[in-house]
Image (tube, rainbow, N blue to C red):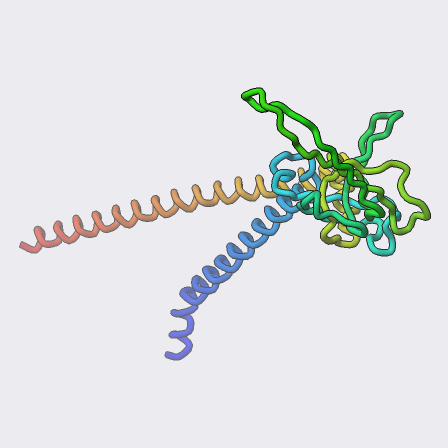
Length: 243
C-alpha cells in the first residue's frame, strides 16, 4: 500500500516541480532582460550622451580620458562626469571640462584641466530700452587659464566661458575604455546591436510561447467542455434506457 501510494502521487509531484522550475526560469529570464535593458540605457548615456540634446540638457556629460595630462588624479581610460555649474562660482583649482577648437583642422576636442587663473573683465555699456531711454548695463566676461596636473606649463589658450561644458564631479577608472570601444564600429555591434538583437529575439520567443500557451489553454477548455457535454449526454441516454 505504501509503495502504491508513492506511485500514485509521483505525477502530481513532478507537475509541481516542473511548475516551480518554470517559475524560477521565468523570474531569471525577466532579471536578465532588465539587466540587458539597463546596460543598453547606461551605455547609451555614457557613450553617446553628449551627442544627444536630451542628455546634455539634463547635464549628463560623460567623457573618456584619453591622455595622462591630469594624472595621478584622473588616470587614462577613466570615465569622468562633468556636472552643472555657475559661471560666477568657478574658481582657481576647480577642474573643468571644456571645448578646444584647432585652428588648422577646425576639429573640436574636449579637455578636462584645472583652473590656474580666473580672468574677469567687467564693462559697463549704455543700452536703449523700448522707449528710447538709455540705461547702463554691466557686462562681465570670463576667461580661464587652465593647466593639466601632469603638465609643466599652462595651456596655450585660455578657455572662454562659452566653451565650458561642465564642472568635474567624479570619475570611474577603466570605464572610459569601454565607452570609447562602444563608439567604434566593432564596439557598437558587440555592445549595442548584439544585446539589442538578443532582447528582440527573446521578446519574439516570449510572444510566440504566450500565444502558444493561450491557444493550448483554449483548446484544453474546449476539450473539457466537449467531454462534459458527452458525459451529460451519456447519462441522459442511460436514464432513458433505464426507464
